[in-house]
Image (tube, rainbow, N blue to C red; front, top):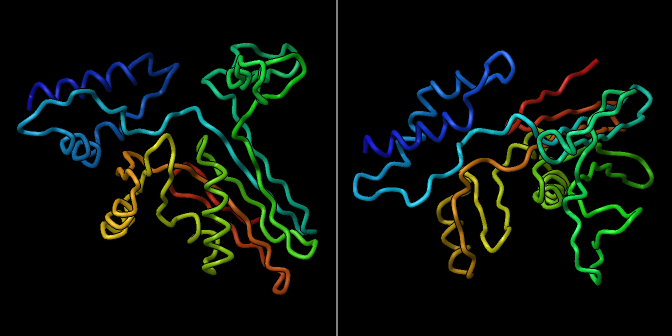
Amino acid sequence: QQAEAGRLAYRDRDAFLGDPDASPMPLETLLSKQYAAEQRALISPDRAMATLPDPALPASSDTVYLTIVDGDGNSVSFINSLFNGFGTGLMSDTTGVMFQNRGALFVVDETHPNRIAPGRRPLHTIMPGIATRNGETVMSFGVMGGHYQPFGHVHLLGNVIDFGLDVQQALEMPRVFHYDGVLSVETGIPIETADQLRAMGHVVEAAPLPFGGGQAIWIDHERGVLIGGSDPRKDGCALGY
């Protein structure tokens, strides 16, 4: 068990340790009792881990989403991502903006719709959303989380429209996501539900981390009220002005 604890500790050292002035590390989280308990739960008294799971901490560089609605009902739904940590590693001399490297998602098969070629845009996961009803905007929203994003739109819209939740409740609800042959279920999905999904033939695994994140503003035209929500899975907040 001590050897396993050492493996986990060295994994975290290699993942997070650097010059703290240049690359701040999540020291409070790493030293917290909650994180210690999570790592302790990974250690079996009977068997060594064949491979170490990735550190259960969110990456510091990730997709960013924001939405704004002003007093006249004008909406902005904005999402941005460099893809890899520093994108291409190139920066504009005039604006200081880093260039993204989404071109890495092209394929080299000349017959594929996403084939690489000059002047083409690659497949990507960036998709800010605005929902309308009878020509009026009723919700400005976006979901982060790579491949989860379109499925996250379904979750959010379904929770609001089909189940009548407000945007904060809709963002907080536990999630499932099927990708690469596995149906991942977040904490909060009842064990009975996971068992039913297995019985239906799904390969079900507990999600090691919460997935996705989102922000949303619901526009209540009848009352003249804006209702904001921010997903607790990521840094963010809902503010009125």
